[in-house]
Image (spheres, rainbow, N blue to C red):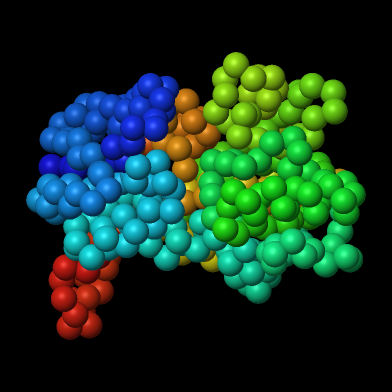
Length: 337
């Protein structure tokens, strides 16, 4: 099978570390595909240059590792929308969940309407936050992922601090969400299609005075105390009844937002009273061999190569189902994946 692996070619502003991080995952996936006998081609995506699309359309499968263009995450949505128009099967979530989940206030509204437990939230309108909004609160960019814009000052305990933080965020980001801060344990639940992987827990051992949150530094700055003090443990060591409740909430969120298609991760907090709250649904999270989803896959019994192939098989199976449905209803056979 011929596979086109698409990825963000980056920009002149990228550091050597940024380039290495992207290419590292791309090469891991290529090695896994070649290990199973597939012809894997690397296809970089650049702004204003659509030669990548012609190359991708000639493949039997597009392996989508493109998380933006020129480092801008907002273009990820456009890339996935374009892939849907090609009729070529592609890995990961479709355009709708990718777009909606990248707008946290919209995703939370839909999840809450479907009865999925989410913390109280509001979209910052100018610099106005309802005076009755519960504290502590955490302030996040609404249209970013990978913990962009989140540091220890993101959690606010006073109205003054909240107003200041919102103002600072609005200078950098168009949309800012304010969310009730839920204390307690934090869990991640991974999915490949409808397969739920073993639940992982984030263990926090941070410097005194730090909020137990997964900040940008905790994810990406390996020299920081936040990185060292934020450790995933999988499978999570928690009572079976608690893990069941976490799994139920995570599956509800995954089915609601992604229809159980593609691969993703649901992040949750469990309050001191034992109530799980869905913080975010993350379509197509980091697929690196040392990232959270791969750790969950290993706990499930899949090595990295098998995880990559499960992602491939999910994409091909989804495409075949849609093609069969189109044939039965008299539609076109080239139904997007």
